[in-house]
Amino acid sequence: MDSGLDYHTARALLEWQVELGVTETIGETPLNRYDLPDKQKKVTPGPGPTAVPQAVKPKKDEDPVEIARISASAARTLEDLKTALAGFDLCDLKKGARNLVFADGVPDSRVMIIGEAPGREEDQQGRPFVGRAGHLLDRMLEAIGLSRAENVYITNVLPWRPPQNRDPKPDEIAMMKPFLERHVALAKPDVLVLMGNISCQTVLGRRGITRMRGKWDQAWDLPVMPMLHPAYLLRQPQAKRETWADLLDLNARLREKI
Ligand code: URA
Image 1 (cartoon, rainbow, N blue to C red):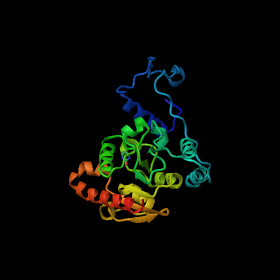
Image 2 (image 1 turned 120 degrees about the horizontal axis):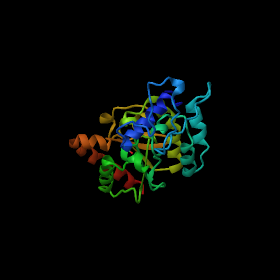
Image 3 (image 1 turned 90 degrees about the vertical axis):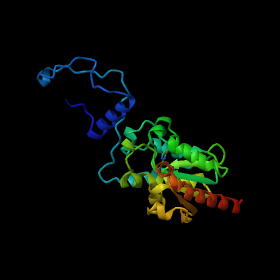
Image 4 (image 1 turned 60 degrees about the horizontal axis):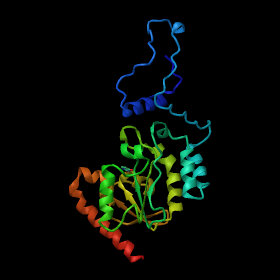
């Protein structure tokens, strides 16, 4: 039966329904699948979850990265940027996500943290780092007197959850990078903290977090500290020692420049 949906939309819709707890695909109206197609009754969809809107596809010669750049650079405030992202329909991840995850914390903080992408809890709540890794991040920050309630601003490379938490793809990163760069320019932090390989790849253009961590770098006119991702620390708790050293270094840097 032709549902009128393209493959990616149909798949995102199905995955979303599975997450909502759907276990069987039974329609509300009986359908005799032995009927010839022209005799089949048209089944009107029931109330169920709202249909995922169709994304606007770029016209033949339009480059989604260029469109992202134009859209991001037009934003004059963080609120504008959030609105621009919410209206950006060229990234397929948006179709499968429940919420836009823009940022959390205090926007004019000296420290801005960049993570990878929302997971399940973040997608549900529309806020970054609210799951297990987020709780660990909060404890790490607290250890050096930082908190998102007072003096930290947090965002991710991707504002929409990738299906099954898969790694972001290069074209998704490229499309979101202009928004991230504008986000940093508008938030005006003193330092950036990059959590894990994806944010290092996006901001510094290279990965290798176990070698890069703890070494100050420079990007977008700002000092940048790469750190191990809290999700990695949950899997490898012995690496917390190194992260503690990196946090102390971050703290020292902030104190140097009060
Ligand atoms: N991991 C991330 O990188 N970001 C989140 O928001 C949550 C988990």
